[in-house]
View 1 (spheres, one colour):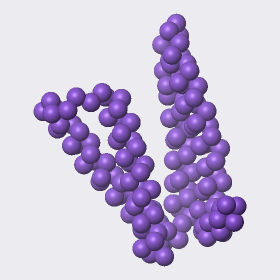
View 2: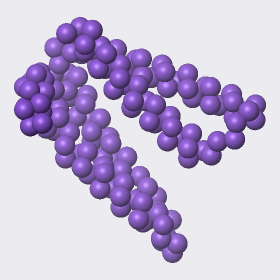
View 3: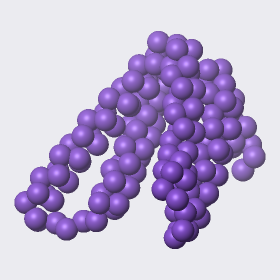
Length: 142
């Protein structure tokens, strides 16, 4: 198993290796802040400013991750950048279509999905479609 990881790591471009290393801290911060948010949001007596702060704290870690991703895009070679931007465009298009589908189905009362499930599903769709298309594009251009 270790050999598989080492081969994968060595197959990454230097820009992608730097991105994975730089993204570790904000990703861990995001996970920790999500866990804290989950505990804090269940506290009945917590004042609203604290609720808002703990609800938005994970977004700051996500913004930190996004800033690192933007730096990675600037460090990529032309092919890697083309793959990344293609994956982003496809994932955005797929998710936009899913958003419109969900809105129209909800508006027509065809489905009765809770808002939390819709938001979570759309976020998951964005991440999964990006990952799948990125993987497909890497194989296609490799």
